[in-house]
Image (cartoon, rainbow, N blue to C red; front, side, top):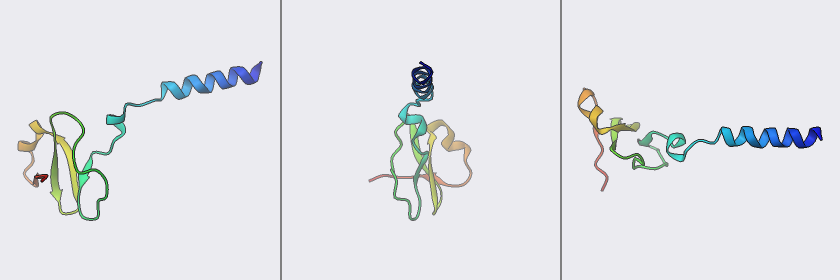
Length: 75
């Protein structure tokens, strides 16, 4: 009986920790030697190049607030 209770508790805990895909996806979208995705999955987010080695998905309303970097043009 205790084993079944433990299994049920673990299953419930695992389900409670499930996270939507867009939250766990990396915000990084580019940079030298980056091999992951180069587009942003979230609506209204753009890939923003902070330097040659790191680009990150940021909300399009935040682009103007950065004095360094530029939006990445995906072709």
